[in-house]
Image 1 (cartoon, helix red, strand yellow):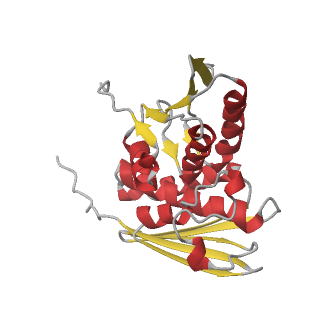
Image 2 (cartoon, chains in turn blue, brown; image 1 turned 90 degrees about the vertical axis):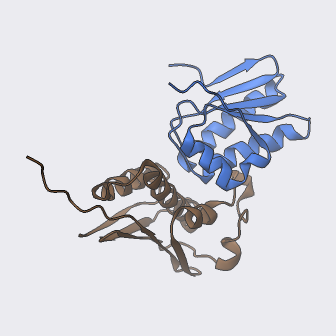
Image 3 (tube, rainbow over the protein chains, first blue to last red; image 1 turned 120 degrees about the vertical axis):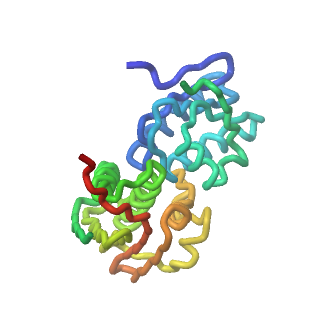
Length: 107
Length: 147
């Protein structure tokens, strides 16, 4: 299985799970926070490539991590978000803090 | 078309996914779009999560989900017998949360409102909470088989 967390320079890359709900959120946040506290993490990239479902618990995960790095000038990015995930990002107002990277790699 | 299901399950977080799968299966005969399926799954996920986190807060209990499909109209009722909500109006405000330490976004009711056509919340402190939601689907007439 591929590792969920990678650090590239001062970016923490998080490969988000297939479903992000309350059940998944606590462990995900806890693990991410360990990397944020220990490593040289300034920015976070949330990779939604595998994600097919996300509810407001996922929004909480992103906002919570953002709060941890924002005071040091960190930024949060979303990559590979499909239409549903982009919709959640839009409806929740997450777009105010989350930079959605659009890619034209869809086949 | 009329169909009705009543489910009762333990108020534990693993059942949030169960409730989503159950509602997605229930609405399959409506030939919903991917977006409609996602809408309903998200709304149910929010309602059940609220019952687990806020209604029972780690204590044992049951969540009930009662769904009716009447022609193209879907009714969903998610109820718990947990601690109830003191101030429903405040709880429904976007970004309001009583549990910021859990990274709760305070968007649960907002998502239910955004993704369903109607939302009603009834709650009695120390008795429990009932969430009622409706969503209308375009009814597709069954087509006669072509020879």
